[in-house]
Length: 238
Image 1 (cartoon, rainbow, N blue to C red):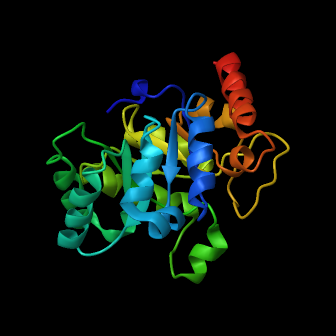
Image 2: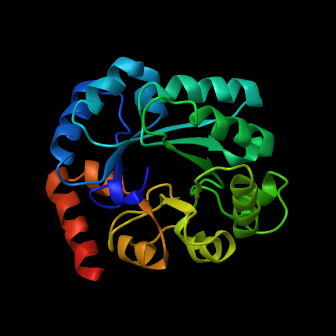
């Protein structure tokens, strides 16, 4: 799988437990964006049947389940998830190198196109103070770089990171390591529960591969038009 397989770098989350709404959004957004992100809320509510209904649009899907368990269990989860043919799937990088290696090896067994396997570093809802309260020394960027280095050593394709770590990760991990970046907000948009955010243009310019932009699109009065406008701005800035 290559980022050139995607129409554009925008992935939008279907963060809803309303299946009809999710399917309608998928149909509206499929012509406008590079892919959709299906997360825990939707997948726990509707499972594989709901996933397949969304996938019928033909749009690439980032299956955002953030697997985190012992290596054998995560490998089994990856094998099962790969039967759905996602474009991207993720695990928590804090699960350790052995767990990430097991995930990467399991993904290679898929009969279809192998998905990107991505490590989640530090959630964009967390900042330095939150990490210190959890007993993590150093800054959020220090922790992201540490986990990303482990992910790369384990054979993962890239990581999920906040926009603030893009440049440091590019310098540390090179140009081919995939950076999936949430915390993206168009200028003037509400930050919501995200603490480390950036505009789409700035994040792409710094080296992001995929921009996860959910609420500014799916909560818009016209989601397709909102996605189209962001894509046009990115194309103009390129």
